[in-house]
Image 1 (cartoon, rainbow, N blue to C red):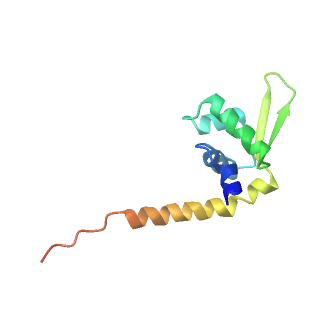
Image 2 (image 1 turned 45 degrees about the horizontal axis):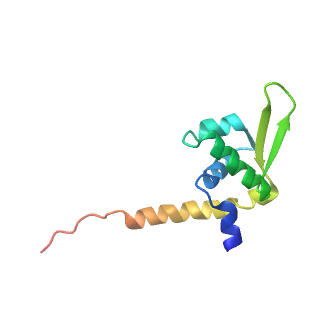
Image 3 (image 1 turned 60 degrees about the vertical axis):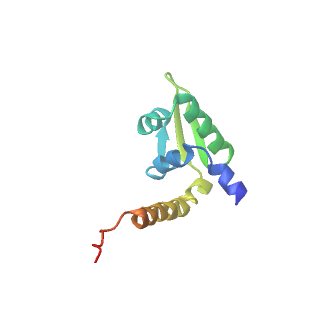
Length: 106
């Protein structure tokens, strides 16, 4: 469990994955726009870690200005059911913690 969580720990990794699950590939600039609160340095760091862990691929095109695209590997796509289950759990948690209608005292 610890090894799995180490691959996903970090404030932005799940947010990055959620963006990549929505499409085939994304350019670096698209990821920056989609996640406006993350700094460029932190985004680069998180993307590199995900790449090192075999979760995503990075493709650099030799052009000016440089074009870099990120996409999920088969290993990355295999996380999708886990991600969906986590979203389902978050929704269940929200509903359970939501204050219900107050019952008048007798």
